Length: 164
Image (cartoon, rainbow, N blue to C red; front, side):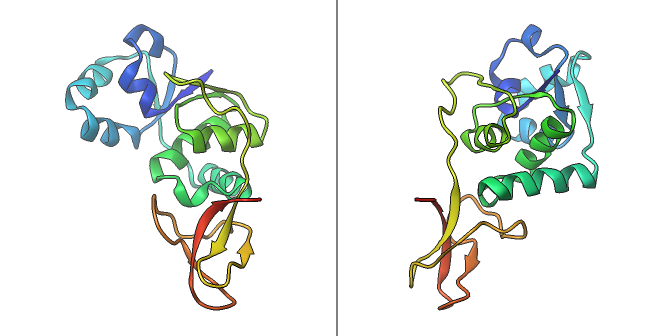
């Protein structure tokens, strides 16, 4: 079984997508990125579309927090990760953060069009003021850029950085 990230839906030929599992939330993302491709994918009956239950999402958030990748994952990324973890499936993605979470748990990944992540990175929160560090908590703010928390020591913004 394979869980397909949006990159696979966008770039793989339709016959390679057959039998894949996807999150329902990916449909809106696909429509936004490529309306034409979205029409093609929606017409296929060989992809299994799934809603992601809350307990599955919690499992994915905890796994992503443990590797430190959670702050930089989108809601759709968390949905896809939840499917792959709970269904114990290979995650097909070019997203290095998703690959990092899966590989940190020794779960299989497959790249769409890249070589894929070669090693597991650990992330931490680092203060921009006093340079204090802390592990990434499961309840951290999520955004693709910028600060995701405030420092408990000095109140300055904390950014996600690779752990030393």
